[in-house]
Image 1 (tube, rainbow, N blue to C red):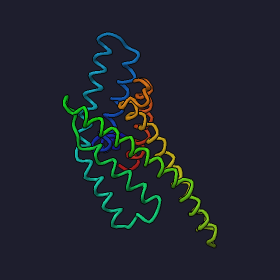
Image 2: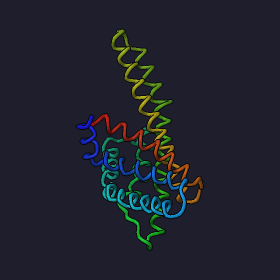
Image 3: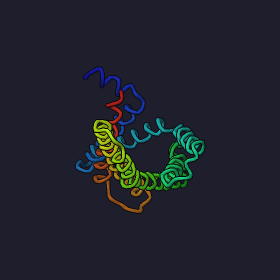
Image 4: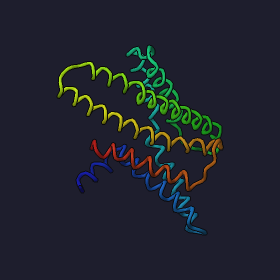
Length: 210
């Protein structure tokens, strides 16, 4: 257990999720505190948010790589390909930025693209759940062989579970840019709570890999 914790916090993605969990917990705690304690928690939340941006500073490179891979794969011939293309194109401007007082307009544009990216991601997940999964199930039924069919069904259930997890994560995170853009003000308690949920779900996937 200790060795896995060590691997998790020494992994870049795992460390970022650890900081995010602390940040969201501080955000929730600040709602229930007053005076100097609330100020300290709010300051910690802002500092952790700034620190986490360094982890995403070169994230636009991955987004461009994903777009290039989709183009090389000729993914434009399918709906899922178009949704993935739109998602990663919108994710690129969201990364690679640091906050400065004079960057308010840039931050707003970045959060707008982040909102659109999450919307496309949610649509892509729904498409995979209700269309791609049905296609794979119909193909599996057409094949003969009991064991192969059972393995295919088990794999389909695992994929479906992973897709629903991704859907919940993106749905929770969607509230953050909506709040920052004043499109759907929900408050620190709701944002912090949904951040905790999405962070724990995303951290579990990383935990299983390290």
